[in-house]
Image (tube, rainbow, N blue to C red; front, side):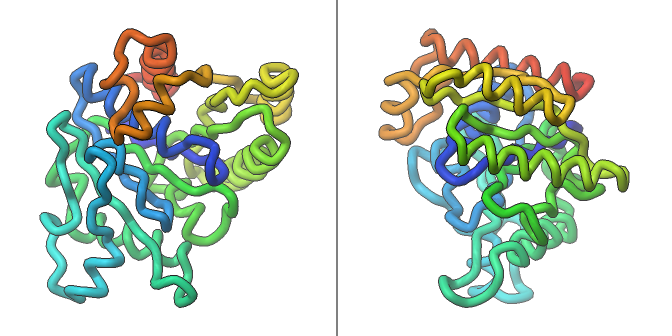
Length: 252
């Protein structure tokens, strides 16, 4: 089983890339589990026609100790197994602690043993890398961390902080940095700036996705663009990214 964590600042497109990676892996015949670790709980929406699924924290609030694995896990027609950690009631509680609680609940209920995925993807908000938001980097969860960025200043700044956190945890035997995913926004010197960022952390750009109308339309329609527009250039780039991620992780 390969376990990946996809990080990136809010709005950088990490959930779109995570969902399309899940769909691409499923198209290649792998059994995939995607776990949304963003308090907005919209990580897996593209895999469900744009609609959201109940979250672990929401169900725990409603059912308490009576929560069952079947309540948390939702399998799509494409074969992707979806889970959303969720977040606390707005203004009350800690979102990071919510992620810790959700992942511990999945582990306690034996989610990985029951569903036996080939690939697990944790989709994690990366504006803040502390507490629960670093949980997927820790031992026993992700094996590799991939960071989504663009050439924009704040995206690169957030990506740098994430890479630094990964390196700090790596010294304890936790997840290692697999590379940067460049989600192009057509800013000046975008590729060169991202290459510099990768060099700073002794890593590489493992894949790049061009901005395209097909991605935007698929997002509006609530479907992965690799499914809606399989022959478009972005879908081909995404498929190549999926292959590169598998190769970086040593294959299955």
